[in-house]
Length: 178
Image: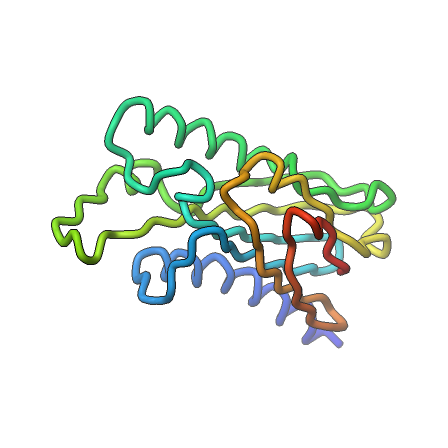
């Protein structure tokens, strides 16, 4: 059974590495309105990684004006607050770290001269929670869609010591069973 924590720890690390790689080598389909949330639960730790098209968060993808840069910084502050992820109160979870996985300067580097294939941009944020009562972790709720109305679907994948789950969150379905 000592293998399970090692697997979960490795999975959490891979979430971050995969996101950074995907962000810099974006070859997959970029679908506006659709994000991805990966969750790894390891004993008292909950690691989550959200990847959402910049268009869904800001209403635009390229940062070309001071207003757009201000909107980006405001959105990144809001995203790293973690306030729209709601874990059960009985689990007694505390957000210990939230960070964007791409520096703000990277959003300013979009300069596609190929208008037939414009560059697309995603925002990726990693969250780490510590929970005093992890046995109470049975559901994740969100108010994400109230804050970011350009997003209408988040595909969720979760890994715990005993199982793997997948599903979706939408403005109408704001709970995911852990």
